[in-house]
Length: 225
Ligand SMILES: *Cc1c(COP(=O)(O)O)cnc(C)c1O
Image (cartoon, rainbow, N blue to C red; front, side, top):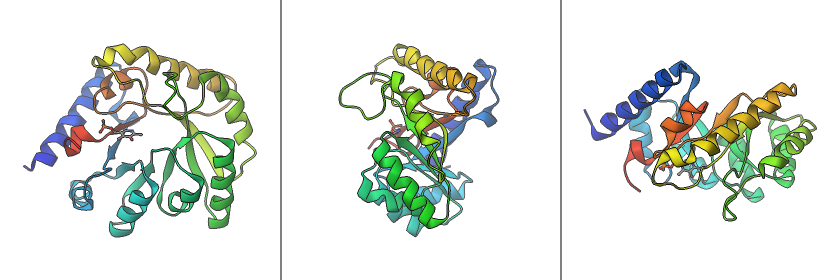
């Protein structure tokens, strides 16, 4: 077995165990394999093992890899996006995880409509409050999501966050719990925010225990960057 396959299967097993601890079905959690900075050949190798969902944080790198690789791969654009790179996301991404401004929503909607597609989007939330991070303040999420209803070519499917960097993933459990409550409160209000994209290599198990539906895992699968 290749080291890639060994690491991949270990991550899948950890996801299953976290689901079991939380009384959830592993089918509720999508593993997004984050391939940023790693060569397309490794993506192809993992895809050949049957893995479908891959994530990239830069639109150009996503476009380059998607152009080279089979279209049976489902690409997730997971990073902050500048408006001049929207075209790459519309052309190649299945889902966009980092919607964080009205101006970006306008451009994504305009180009999705022109391409004749509906773009599933997750709204990025800055749950840790760090000044360096993208994303909306938790208090601003309801108003922002309500406003997105006007964009017919965007479908808001959930929320996304990056937790604070922490030695011990238990230290960010409360941040994941805030996200969960935010999504739940919106559901109560009649909205549909089913997806929760949270958890990376060092904290995905805690994120799953707190309700993540998408974990974005890079280095635990592909190796250190
Ligand atoms: C790089 C990245 C990840 C994955 O990080 P790892 O620590 O390698 O698992 C997840 N989400 C985003 C937005 C990223 O940029």
